[in-house]
Length: 449
Image 1 (cartoon, rainbow, N blue to C red):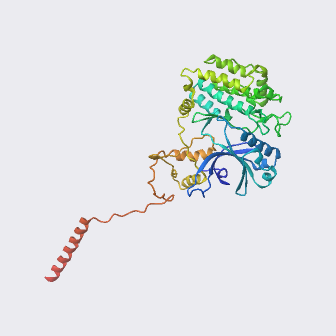
Image 2: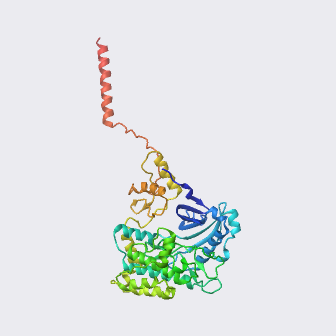
């Protein structure tokens, strides 16, 4: 079974579990960050999302500057609805050098010539809104409007924080995300919504700016002023969030041209259909967010957050019906196959499975004791197809008996030697009597011959 093991293995003190995504500048992994083993003989690890710049991108100084700027921006943000940044560093021949703040940023010249620049972020157990929308379509369900407004209010709160957060000079960052889209809004299985990926965010006084006429971000969610390459402010992200809310409520794409040009033309001139919603206030709110004239939209993210939160609080079941606990239950119902935990299979586990396949065995057991049973889970649908196929073999085994405490694992393919039971005492006595009788008979015949 073919599998790309180049996206697994060690990276400094990290163990790369699997690659989640790859783009033109960087690749993102689910990884384990190990503690200092000197602290405890067994050590421990923390699951993180590790983003490292691709080797080819290291040769382009602008990509390196953008990568470092992303870390600088994310390091300034501290909000429950924004994915957290843990570390910025550079891997140099197996040795990790790190820095977590803007003042500790690694030298791009050093990175380009001697190592791999990376940053680690919070790993969110959940699904992005793109997967949520796909699941709703598969199940033939409409989006729960009360859940929708609560999710939207969380994103608006995150954007408001990014816009007003103080920068290094004490002035507000005035940060425009520029890539608010379903792929960058995560809903965790704990019911918490998080905005991620500030890779192309723009700060008013940032040292790295977009070249004139160059568009960055996903075209279908760009505001009209963004599509025209005009100056942007917080209202551009309000438009993008409005598109996301519209698509979730209607379960269909709003601007879906066959080409980039057609998509941009639709953004600039397409007649947006009226969205019928319950409650009707939601449709009016989304329509205001999607005004092509920025002055006709909400003036701030705070206004959007307040309006959406007010609708959410008026849900039939009250505020508790859209609490994180309620949203967690909604996610569990929407993705019933997703377990409450996920095994962190690494390269060694994959090699075990491959060796079993080569021997013609159905699977190889990978131990992960949980309660009174052992089960292997693979929750994410974002890994490579070949890797998912390997893990599907593990899933097919279902529940396995847990090992007893201290019991050693048998080597793969080891065959238990056949144990021959000793003869019973009754059978031995019978054989002895028969032999003795034959000998006595032979002696009797010789004596009287």
